[in-house]
Structures are given as structure tokens and as C-alpha cells.
Image (cartoon, rainbow, N blue to C red; front, side):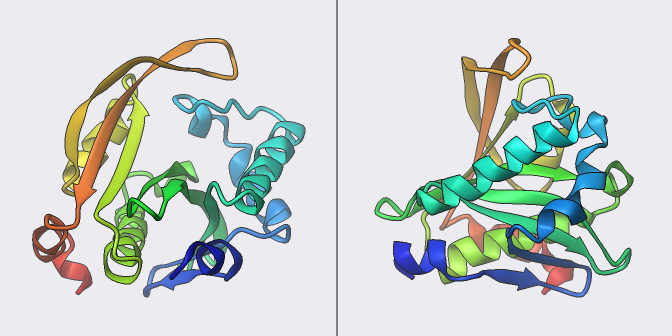
Length: 198
């Protein structure tokens, strides 16, 4: 898959629990109720408090796709029959066969349910088995212990901390913890961590 196909063709990834589909304008109103759950944004760079904040966030995601910088997705919960989150392939570098999975947020009711594990499996499988990438990165705030534990739980390798890495929307300074998966690690991760999905 070349860059033109990656950014311009719709991508849909799904299993019995979740459907991940390329973000479109139609998703704005469907995702707004979840985006207004302010607890979601506690450790993120973006701070969403109003529909206008989310409009800006949403438009930025779509603009990044046009600029071939990222490919954002809406996440649909097949059990709840609702759109309850977003994620993104960002910092896309197909020449060097790598990208970042991030900008992920889910309705708080899904935290700790295993729903995110379904999402990550579909995303990682696509990265390594369809795109044939050699590296997939993840990062989170050094303060977000729950997210760090979740990354380790799905087999990501902690690489280190980038100090004073970002200035958040609210002016606070963030250190970022980086994790990664490599192509030669994926088969083992798939067979152990995600064995129930095979």
C-alpha cells in the first residue's frame, strides 16, 4: 500500500466487538457525547471542554489526513451500538516503515473492559501484516500510569522518557514515555498477548 492509497482509501478494521473506520465529517455529532466526558482529556495534550474545542480537534484531525500526516479513525462499539472513541495512525513514515498509534480516547465506561485490547490488536495486525511496517510507536504522559500499564500489558516495550516533550493546551509541560513494537516481536506478541483473538 503506497502513501496515496493509505491516506485516500477508507480503512475499516473489525472483529466481533469493535469496528474501527476512517474518520469522516459524519462522525462529529456521533462522537461529541463521548468527547464531552472531560475525564478523557486529563492526561492528553488537547484539553476539550466545549463542543467548540472538539470541533477544532476534529477538524485538525481531518486536515492532518489531507496533509498526509495522519490517518484518524472513529471507533464503534458493536455491543453498545454506538461510536465511543477515536484513535489515529500518526507520525506516518511509510518510507522508513513506521508510524505511531495514538491520540486514542474512549468513553470512560469502556476503561478496564478489554475493549482497547481489541482495538490495539486490529491496529497492530494491520500495521505489521498489511502495511509490513518494521516499527510501531506509542507514547503517553509520564503522569498517565494507567495508560503505561495498559501498553505494557499488550506487550509494548518501554523505551524511555522524553523530558519536557510537549506543552499542553492548558500550558502545562509534559514529559512523554515512549513504547514500541517491532516487526520481529509481533509474532510472539500475537501468539501470547492476543492469542484469544486468533
